[in-house]
Length: 220
Image (spheres, rainbow, N blue to C red):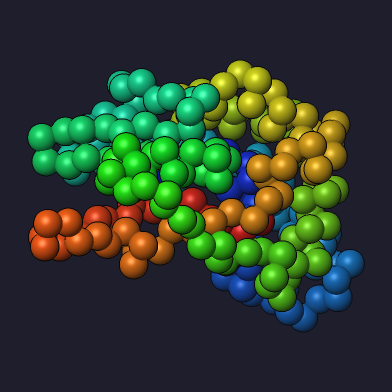
């Protein structure tokens, strides 16, 4: 089971999730200087964006195609449903779009595991972490250069999993042309699927499911 998340929100989340590694001296700065440094660091990541080298853009090729001989990009993904089940000779994969997780998870897990009324647990919530003030300020005020957003959102990854309407909404958000509240999915608390939640016992035959995580950070 794996998830995808729109790449700009994911990158910002990843920076904060690994803040002490990305900016080791961040704790020595006051909030104002920390805000400026983090903003500049995030924008610099997008200026250096290269689809051929980007971790997320290459993840499905390296971790799924090369391992299971299953080319996700050659297969249809239901952008509006928010999930798709892929079947190959040696693996079945449930792929869920994070922005649709809250509304599609029950149907997805019913189709994939035949589990009815599947429940998700809210965990790893950015608004409850020590950096919540900085994180929320960045989300509310950062403006990513238009040319950077064009490269990110014309990538194969973005086009394969997101509708043109979703991409336009994301671009408006990160250009500062709309408020965060307009994109409820970007700022809502996102349920996290734990490995224990993915273990089931059916007909006395215990089956462990693997959770492939393409660095799909869950901060919100």
